[in-house]
Length: 406
Image 1 (cartoon, one colour):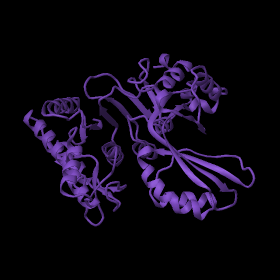
Image 2 (cartoon, one colour; image 1 turned 60 degrees about the horizontal axis):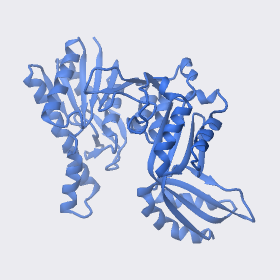
Image 3 (cartoon, one colour; image 1 turned 120 degrees about the vertical axis):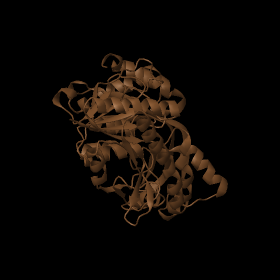
Image 4 (cartoon, helix red, strand yellow; image 1 turned 90 degrees about the vertical axis):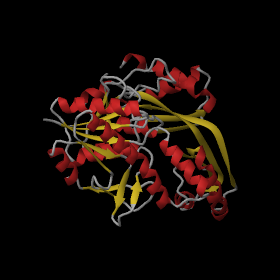
């Protein structure tokens, strides 16, 4: 008898009919002789509706009360899912994150999982129940309801799978698996049968929306192999797991794109120790998440420092930089939006040469200018004009013949 954890996203449980279909799929999994734990998100649109309600009663609701409010979305879904399973003649019990033993940090709206005590989950399973757990939420040590932030239900599923020592973790979503690129952007994109944790991490951090990077990091840390697959069909999905030697034969696994990026350049920064530290400390204190950083070669005792970030963060950047630019004696800064990031990812890049050259050649043939370049062991990323990103993705996907590797 296997123990399986299944997670269903908001679109998979978006209405009563879909909830009943999820109930049928879960029951079928149990009928095959398995113990089943189900993690569910809020029904699609519910979280946005709750946020809208909050803003209608308060222009600045506290994060603590937002967590209390938003947690009700998943609690609605677990109750409805358990009801649907019971109505079909099978036993199910619903548990909130706190009831499932998920203990988090005390940071509201973006808490981190500290520990999980799965005793209550195990007891319910031993009693023959399908256990339905609310994703995205937990409870801090002081007893406050907390939420885990974007992608929190995926994180809940993988953390529960690790805690109960599940034999398999399945992430059911509205796509068939992980593709070589977003099929809505590159029609020739292929589904990948498998991908390593590191590749999935890089693709997630580079714009792929299938999984959030925190969930993949947790899976890698606790060696939780999981499958990303569709809740709307029975097609095999993509297995995300530890890398194997055979994986290195594929040089580039996929292409990711991320729109709505911005670039900030601080001009004529004195080339002396501590200047960059002061700048990026100010940004860190403002909770600005930085992506790529490039510093020009020093000329006449000063240099320019450029970095990229989400366009939504620009407001925080401008207020953080104004005082620090004067403090370090830089001449000023300028912000530019309308840019996007394109990344190629593959563990095979470690052992193959010419990958960056092929990327740059593909963009050059399309007449696409590169504004910034960043590299890591298994990723090369470039910043280009946002209005050319779809064209660029198709050119690069074709250059690496990714449409043939699925």
